[in-house]
Length: 142
Image 1 (cartoon, rainbow, N blue to C red):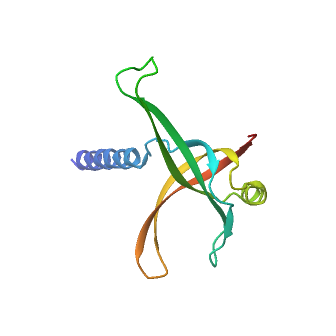
Image 2 (cartoon, rainbow, N blue to C red):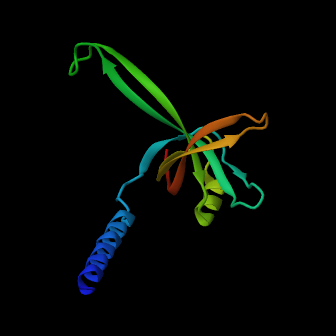
């Protein structure tokens, strides 16, 4: 008589425990960015008290496309769009090399991940910032 309720309790516990383990499994996802462009300003090094230093610079990427009826021919207008990206380099070796060798106008390839953050400016206004956290910076010849 006592064995049956104990078995049911144990079975319920095992079922609950397996549900908990299943819910702790993280879903796989990817946050990867690859950019090829020109540096817009010389890098700056910043360090907020108690935090790691960071090298920051801007990178411009361009898109070009033809508008109009003719895709193959010479007809239509060429449109262009430049997008500016904020690049942050935290990795110690890469951060120092980037700060030392990257200059305005350099052509570089950046690999990293996109990050959305929030900060308070000097006027106490909350602002949102989007930055690319660089894992790799490759210098290309002009």
